[in-house]
Length: 319
Image (tube, rainbow, N blue to C red; front, side, top):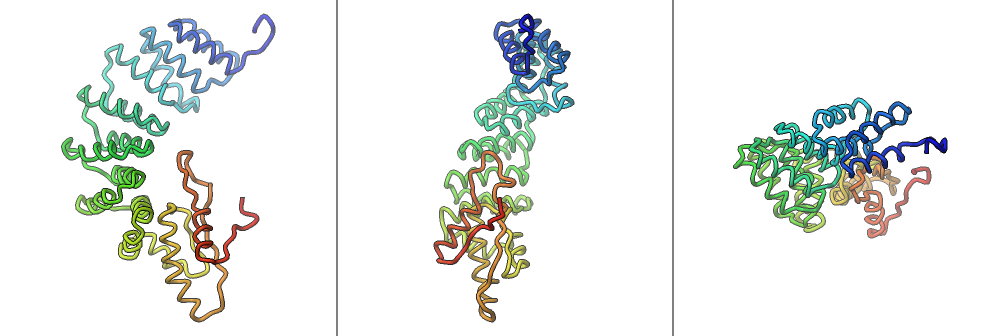
């Protein structure tokens, strides 16, 4: 490329570095990485990860950690491969990772949707006789939840007391959500009831996960829970009035329960003394939804009103 006066880009460098990494040529990988920076080509997570892995295979743990530590200042977010290579480099150098190291790696796998690797790292933590904390458990449970592994999530949660780790709202929420996705609303309800016994205050995420499960798998139970529990969402709806309701923080299941509550209370009450109302429903469609989230609150609301035979349509200017 250089002889042909073709300027290499980040893909060229990353591919060449990756080739050197696979060929156990850590010297060449480092040389290419330095050349990349001198050429004012911005290194990405692939070039960093491949170079770290090359150093790891060459037993150069100091270089591997130096590169890993340079990623955040360069505004490059490490991924599961970056963390794994850095941890493996420490292992080969007999540098013992601590709970923070493991937690960071487990969280990276959780965010990357790699629940199997998150579990492997969690059990490697136990094997290394490192005491897990609530962050370790919560990250591993959340990884299982996103991977649809409710049994694994529940198994991890139930192991926390034996490890003398107190669950927090995050570990409760992740486990309840895992049970919801696995159609296990009884387990979700049991966990919800256990929160008060352990002095853990539920939040809107808790109610969303619980009511999503109850609404989808047992409509009557969901309705009763919604009406009887002292929910933050109920207090919000009571303050909304009949002309507008904001659902953008709610899940699909809670959204439908909220609409039923709103129609049967605020809207029905005002209709007794007025002409038909024009109401606004805010769903926040698509703005804050995560990549792994397949819910569609706006569509659920439109379908709900269609089933009731009520006119509902999105604003034309709403993207």
